Length: 455
Image (cartoon, rainbow, N blue to C red; front, side, top):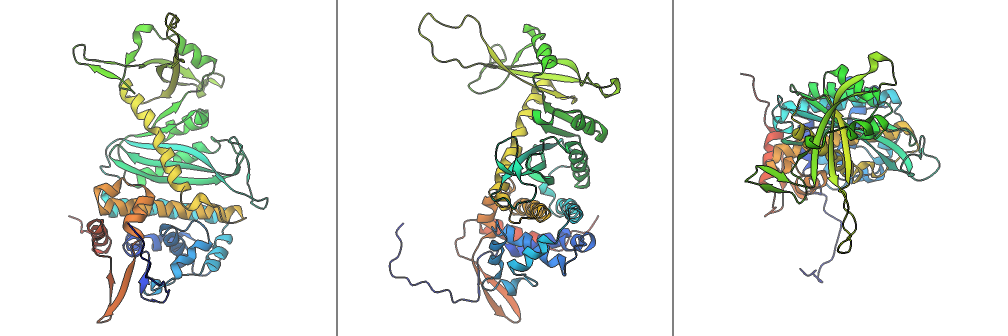
């Protein structure tokens, strides 16, 4: 490909837009009830909160990761496609008018919108009766400057604010964000995790999940508050165990004959013996945890351990190891899944890291305000936009149903278009030979079709 040397750029066409995909996505949001929920639950002391929140969501979907970037809604013919677009300065003032209570109201909007999206786009969460997963984790959103409220240096030695996420997924569908909260930068990872888990479980049920829910987390959430919350909510838990003396002793007591080889990196399946020849093996043993607490707080559960041969540096001939050494990775669970399946599902907890990476590649790349509540509101709007993008992908095609947020934006949202008027109707002229035109058309049809009638 070679660039043309005979062109002259001129910004003079008032009929062009750069994000035509916002039309079906925001129609989808309207069908799912975003405007109704904002009007019902938001009580921010600022005029027209519904229009301002939806403007922020639209700007984030179009790629804005700061308040100034929301100005991309004000170009070309966008004001002919959407009514009520607000300037970035107005939206910044709106965000700064939030309090912690208003952020919780926005969380309520996000929860109900997710339920509306699953009803509008059933493919978003697939079959409601299958096993569902809630993955809990946190990350530090790095910020700079001394004027950021609640910013501090935490466990990662990075200055910023702590974002805690609860991600909902099934074996056949891509994750959506059930709950998110912003905390101080130096807060412990597990702080408030019990309440977050209960709220996320309630969100999952409201979104139509009727099957069993498995809550997965790493060792930062190996605490009584998290485990007790899972038990109270009636869901399974699968949490990486900390190697304290009790867990270490339980692992050491596992009989050598109890270890079962599993499918793992470089593993080979022996057809004759019907087993895996692998460097990784799993075993399980019952364990009672939190024995230092009062007796009614004790929890009896399964300790499932995966051991992997420790890879030692290459040694000279005749100087091989005297005995094999292993790295042990244990987790506790109250699920009734078979041991090997439970281990495989627990390892899939890493999917939450992908969601964190997608978010931090978008709006939370910058927490744009000096006020803590404004940044929390910014994160809440980002969660709404993320789930909307997921729903749009599910409505477009099976490929986009599992695509990354950035991919959905590139293929379905950030599409240039020219607007023409004929017989008092607007026509969007989109590029010819757009590779994902059929997926975009499927999204548009889904977003603009009347709701299905009940049988």
